[in-house]
Image (tube, rainbow, N blue to C red):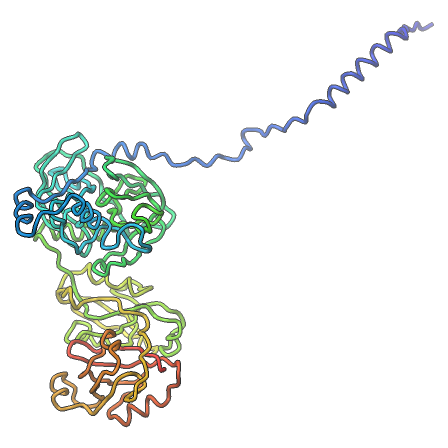
Length: 505
């Protein structure tokens, strides 16, 4: 006979209450988030730490103070009258900000390479040591117009520097100080930079020595608005650069110099997120020549180029607006001797592809006079390969960028295009070396044409692609154009032969 154990009723009631209370407490507690095992957690994206890089690189970065010697400054003051303190400050600001002072829109602010050092002024900048025996690299505009330069080293020494030489076209200057066993920055490779890569700047903005800023490469191959620096394909970054950073190094994440900080683009005169650096390979090309001879020599091709316009593609037999459009060819230049003609499109130089016209000047300027160059061209849709031997650069008449489209000429009684033509005189043929064909511009009715480079005595050889050999042929060629059409004229003068584009009123 089985025996059963009975639980009293009050005990059952007590157990029921306990269970109910536990359920109620569980319902009142907030839901707990599930814990994700560490092995499956998403990895954190670590921001770069540049402290080790800066520790290695900063000792080779210097501050530079450049001024006019007191005796020379006093002599200048006696000759032209001493400046007031306010005038000197204005001159100093112009030295850094250029002719347009802070507050003017759209102005790159590297200092004004063409402006002499203000009387009694002082220029401050940065630089870096490139050899243990005392060679220092900085910007030309930092030391321009000075004869007294002091280099402030990281160990607080102040050392007088000698200006070995400088090059306004690349904005590079080489200094020499009497010191040994100096820390040196390694030279990197600016050719393999890519937009989006991290870069670091070290310099002395506003006198704060060895300040560190960082950012990324924004773009490559930017042309300068300053036409004198057309040989520099600038590196654009968003690294904070301000007054005093000029001449300092731009470093990659290995601590190697890949650029020299040179310009900013600003509405206010201060940093606004757009900074420009000289590629170190361009700078070192100038450095080696300066160390060897004190100056920089460049090759010259002798063409004036501009970007292609979309509406020109069909006329030129092209599908994309790439390459450098040859607007004119300098008489007797390497390009002329090689057979380059106005209207050609240069698509490659020594095998390097040309995307836009600003790509060409740095390629040519990097070569020495006497260097051989192979040009890849498109002429009326046909591919050509020509060889040229570069001559020494003439700064006044070398590679330039011309305006994309000329302003429309105003109508006149003599000609809708603003000038009159006549048969080419024997004297003009002899002067320009034109055996036959063409019409001579006998009168300019609109002064704007002179500003475009069209002058009395020039000879028009073609209207569009149609050669003209008489006034009658010229008028007949123009008869095919209506109001608003763009008229391309091939014009020869004493210096060059080039294309000018006018609009028919």
